[in-house]
Image 1: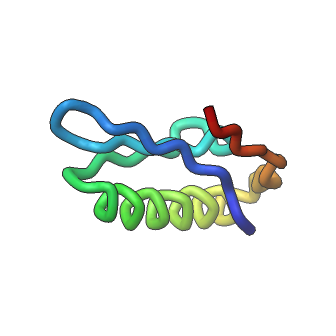
Image 2: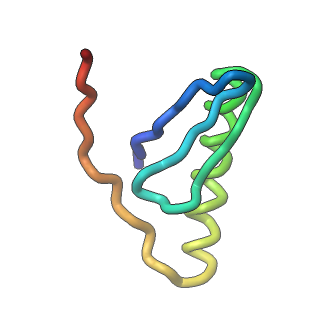
Length: 67
């Protein structure tokens, strides 16, 4: 599955969250670090849902808009 990830640059770090997975977030010092961390967070989030017998949300379609 492929989930949309929102990455934001702050004054001293990067943050990432997954709109389809509430509470699935990561923070890192670099964009590369936050990308690796959010990938791990998604994997753990999905594994936890499966272990608890909960449904895993399907990824929703998103369109990137360049402005």
